[in-house]
Length: 323
Image (cartoon, rainbow, N blue to C red):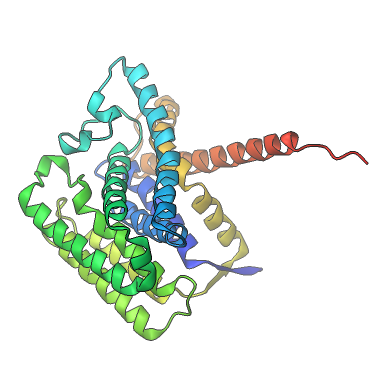
């Protein structure tokens, strides 16, 4: 059987979005942690793209990140408003997670709100203090400083404003996770990993997780900390795993479909529920499995169709060279 090496970041992204879909497919959301993984990886991706030039280049990268996310989010939010014949201004403005967990949108809109508010905050301080050159001059020190400050802000924020009915959907409780990705970038991206860097990343990432996701976490469940800890330790070691080629192909498909799976999985749950009406009541395990499979297949298929149409359209738009 043929085998291939899989990139650790790609494997972690596929795991993260798979856990998100599986967690939301369960009635009690008993498997959290996927969004924490995705937030770390977003930090890695942003730092890789955003710290190569000037502060203006960093700000442009923030705008690019947000534009792709918000265009889809607002489109789906407006569709939800039309479907329910109701408009919620705070939800449209992406600030409703500060007051409620009741959303009309058929996707985890609170997470988009957190991303938006994190980027707005970081964009402001980068613009005011022209921070990108300072990050470039000493990336490891900068990443550790940002991470330490964000954990401090999170610990204070948990004491000042973290009401249980908001389920921890507040940006200052999550910015540290995004900045763990910056530390990974500073230590490992475009560098040869060494033991000291692995210990430093693993130790600081675990310490942040224990402080922010420990026993007093909002959901009171240790599984989130366990999932997060296992992932950051895996990224610290970043083994070159060799897996069967079919498995690696599936990993890359799921990883590339992350955005579609994130935004559409609840819609596909509803499609699966319509189909299951025919069969009446099913055991919970079977019901969860069908929801999960339909959402995963639906999200990946949608990504594949959109990608194929986009590439076909791009080919048609290319000028024909006549000899």
